[in-house]
Picture (cartoon, rainbow, N blue to C red):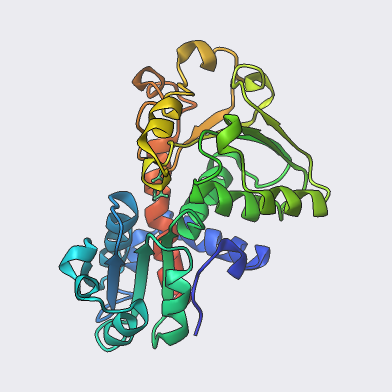
Length: 303
Ligand code: NCD
C-alpha cells in the first residue's frame, strides 16, 4: 500500500504518468465518472482549508465515490485527546483512502505508519504540501508544455511556506531549472533546501527586491506570509505587506511569464493583476481537481 507524504514519494517517471492521467481526465471526464463507485474518501482536516479539502471532495465525487470526514479538529475526538495513530485506525474501518491535514509536521506520516488505507498528506505544519505541488507541476506542464529549462522565482514566506518546500524539492529533479528566492531576510528558505540545491549543483540565488529580478523569470510563484506559524504578531504585521505584486511590477516581466499562487491570497497580489492573462492562479485550482482525481485512482490502484 502506498501513501503520499512528499512529492519525492513518486519518481519523475511516475509523476509523468500521473500527469498524463490527469490530462486524460480533463479531456474525457465521463470515462472516469464511475471509477470509484462504492469507494469512500475520508478528509481529516485538523487545520483550516478551502481549496485542498473541497478539491479532494470534488475529485472523489467526480469519480463516483463519496466522502466522509471533519474540517475542524475541535469537532473530532482530537478534542478529547485522541492521537492521530488511533484516529487513523478508526478511519481505516470506514473509508478506503484518507487525506489528512495537520498543524504538526510529520503527523500524517505517523498516521500512515498505523493506517490500513492509503494516507495523503494534505499539508503538515510548515513542512510539506505534496498535492499542492502536484497541482503546481500539472499547471506548469499544461500551460508551459514542459517541466524543465526555466527560471522560477519564489516570492514571499519561503521559511514557513510548505508549498514552497515541496515545490523546490520536486523541481530540483528536472533539468536546467534555476531558482530565484525572493524574500525578506527573516523569511529565507530553510537551510536544508539550500544544502540540497548546493549538493545537486543547481543554480539559485536569494534576493530581497522583486523588481530586481522580474525580467529574468519564466514563472513567478507568489506566497502569503504564514501568519499562523509566526511566534509573535508584531513580526507578522511588519512583514505581511513586504511584497505586493501589481500592474507596474508585471510590466517588468516577460510577456509569457506565468504567475502562480497556491492561494489563499491576502495582499501579496493586487486584484488588478487578476485580469492579466499571465495570472493563472485560479486556473491552478482547476488543475488541482484533475491531479487529485489521478492521485486517488493511482493510490487505490484503479488504473
Ligand atoms: C496553502 C497551504 O495550506 O499551505 N494553501 C493551499 O493548500 N492551497 C498555502 C497557504 O495557506 O498559504
